[in-house]
Length: 392
Image 1 (cartoon, helix red, strand yellow):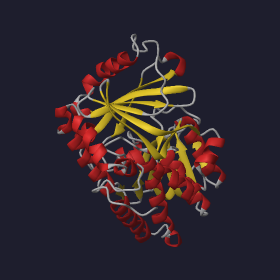
Image 2 (cartoon, one colour):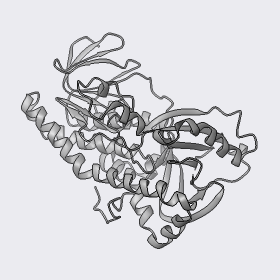
Image 3 (tube, helix red, strand yellow):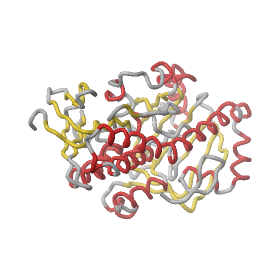
Image 4 (cartoon, helix red, strand yellow):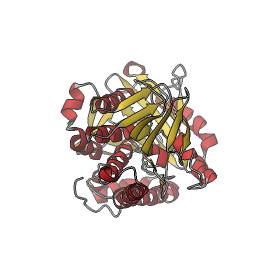
């Protein structure tokens, strides 16, 4: 790839956000370059649960259905039931009309990147962004390549190099760190478990502001725990070990514990500057209640693509890039921010109120609300008072 190559859009990061944006923009005829420091397929810590709103997005954007994703080995397990625990005590279990699906991120992300490449996006793997010159709209990669574009999308994760290149502190770096969650996870073969896990289970009570999960996959089970950094990051690993011991006497001591950080209420109110837009985890766009990030990564990419394509005839003028930025923020304000704001309110109520009673009131509330909680998680209702929402 020659230095100083000109593109319409450079995308830093080839996860669900970057690849979805690349697929939409390249498919519309724009010159797109996706850069990622890793080579795909690459391992990615993620619980891997897919909600119905993600299914609808995959159908809308890619024409993919759960059946087609299952045939390609991308969806590896589906469950129409879930359980909620307080530590080892069962609180609630329910069968659902709309199921949860489960994926491995290495397979899922590779599939999305392949779709972007097939749509016409250029892909540079194994060579991440080193620096960003906003005035020159130029990206320099770790290997020294210099590429320029009318617009730059930062989809490079929670530790985004693009976000850290902004000349202003959008959120407060200490506040950003405190509103992240730390997570630990192990993957265990089904033969290792002393109990049959056929549907997802979440458990409260092991940490102050977070939860543990057991998610089934085809051949193995993902066991994890996350907690808000400001409410017990130092206690998370001992709590996770205790959770593992509650499932197995040796706590799966021979299994490798993988760790990561994820957004958990640190979404930026203005994730754009000049001709740079932040997507997904780079902007903190993840559900502050359950930590769901795949949908918001892809949804923010879809909204960014809508804003860019509305001004494609006028790029690269400064007026057009300003319109793109304003349009993107308006779309986030309409479709994304209200969900995150109200999900955070529910989280505060859950962990500061219900936790005092061992989460027993949660059992009562789940029975009172009927299908509404699951419909909210699946995107059929809004987190804002659980009102019905229209598709798309």
